Image (cartoon, rainbow, N blue to C red):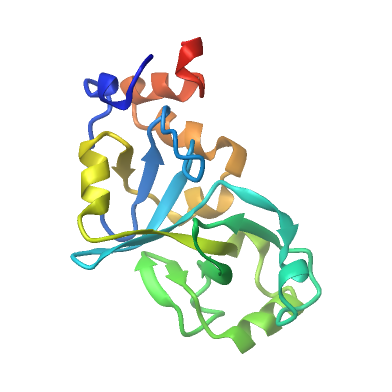
Length: 196
């Protein structure tokens, strides 16, 4: 059976993880929470790391989980296995929505909730300007560094167009394919290494 370490020769990290980058899961990652996932890191320091899985939509919408927002059918994503009773959001509309924390260029975490409700109700905020998550992904100090040494993730830079405009179903493969031929070949690996 193929193991993560068997791909050491191709699965090197061209970039160190940092706030504002994405993590691309190794094609053979076994953890069901992170299989074929893309995680956007919103925090990475000596205290640990935090981020949101970008490509795992869930079967419920915002209207089903929260009465705090307008009755709109807004797609939700599984952000990670931590605090599954909490909603988070990122956006790229700082000119419309104040109070967010700048993560990377024009990508922000959170913001003024009252203002957000009004923007959603009036449809002033376009669907490709925000994303909602249930829960988040978190790592203790040095945990993510250890996982990267074990070839569980590739870190790479990202822009808001990739995050907000890429189809979740294509995101993992596209992230690998745009990194060059030795990474692109991994985009076609079967999920179950027994079939490789």
